Image (cartoon, rainbow, N blue to C red):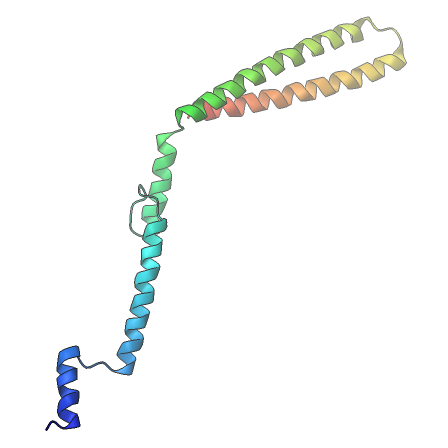
Length: 139
């Protein structure tokens, strides 16, 4: 008949001797394995694996690749629309400048000058928007 120590030794030799501290380590390992699996699953397949420097390089590479054709087409369309708006603003400006030059009533001249200043401000904003879009397209 086997004694309890022999049975324990047989089980230990079969399964390996596991202490309570090793069980805790195994649980932590499982958590770490699960965590790293989630990290890998959440990564973009094109993202290089490694430290933060590898992630930083991946971001720089995507910027170097440029925009997609759709994004470029959208920006070009916006640029055309801005050009059209800018042409309309310039026509209004020219018309208001002509009116201001021929205006004799000083009180109306002040109002017209304020309206002209507003149009000039709008024109400057549209020109800045165009510069930004042009720069984005030229990258």
